[in-house]
Amino acid sequence: MRMLAFARRNLMELIRDPLTLFFGAAFPLVLLGLLSAIQRSVPVPLFEINALTPAIAVFGQSFLTLFAALLIAKDRASALTQRLMASPMTGADFMLGYALPLLPLALLQALLCLLAGAPLGFSLAHLPGTLAVLMVSALFYIALGLLFGSLLNEKQVGGVCGALLTNLSAWLSGIWFDVRLVGGAFAAVANALPFLHAVEAARAAAVGRTGVWGHLLPVAACAIVLLAVAAWAFLRRMRGGKR
Amino acid sequence: MNAIETRGLTRRFGAVEAVRSLNLIVPEGELFALLGVNGAGKTTAIRMLCGLLPPTSGDALLLGRSITRESAAARALLNVSPQETAVAGGLSVRENLRFIAGVYGMDRRAASDAAEAMLERMGLTEVAGRRAKTLSGGWQRRLSIAMGLISRPKLLFLDEPTLGLDVLARRELWRVIEGLRSEMTIVLTTHYLEEAEALADRVGIMAKGTLKALGTPAQLVSQSGCASFEDAFVALAAGEEARP
Image (cartoon, rainbow over the protein chains, first blue to last red):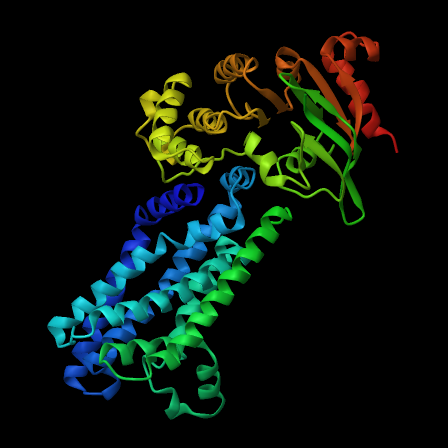
């Protein structure tokens, strides 16, 4: 009950913020349209619609990190969190209350992106499986946001999640270029991080290809670890009296 | 039963002892005011009692529940209205009240009923549908206190409840606080001495992290040998602060 009340409040705060609507829904669709137009003029295998659509859906999830981190960082700076920390809410109530409202937003975001790809030629034959895979990567991006929001202040979140993370996740995910073409340390780093695996899992699921689990498991493992670390960091900062 | 019983409650920040071995008893039903100049340790003491800051040593019992060993149970008995207005800006006044009722375990129907009753009681009905961030400071403060009351706490901490309010809004909140004294134990921190004198059954004066004086406003005036409560406070608190 406590967690659901908190989750409801967070959902209302999120959907009443125009930033959420633009970056969560509109921006990935704009990118999809632009890159499809480029693909029509200069065909590149990477931007073929069945590869591009799930990749853009994953890229859009990097904004979930920003939303989650901003919400927590703002809350941490406000007296409202003092009130909540003095209530019987537990660490699990806080983390689930922040994470849960982002899941329906993530589902809506992914669904919109995949459906928008359909008129451009994206096959919806594997829609349920692709959505399921995208929800796992969404959990990873949300967990990352919970951690950053627990550690950084609002201004730092803007820089780290708004600029740095969206760029890093774009470069290291193989959405815009094939990391194998760069090779060396860059490819090794990209393979060691979950961004590339999130995109590859979604691409494989979108066309019903095998190998989804091999990419998805490391993403799921990272999400679980990040959630645990975020809960620890949040409670340590708040109950330790640091904001 | 005592509402608050602290036993050597201490909090250090590095080499600085913000609260030093605080031993204080507040009986159930009392309106207790904690006074002190800036840095005296009163906010740190309140933060420890509310579970916002772990003590370095010592303990406190809130209605018999230890804040160190039974933190969740202790927190279920209290509510707080922090110094800064603690509202969810994107939610309406009514939604804020329902939200906090839910956080304290009420189901949706009970939370909705409690919110409507609190809107009426605190005179918030006319702004019930407005987003909290669009309200004036006075309305926000009133909402913040209403959010502190909606869980029907046995122990309510009011940290500077009238800070920044004009005299009319302050007197109106005094009236509200007066109306609560029969229902719960209230711990009030304030910089307004006339507020403590008008409202509190007993006053504790902190300086340099320790409790320097404790008693009714009349007792403190008498103890200090001063003519007024303000002079008594200066003698008991500021005098201590001024010493090396």
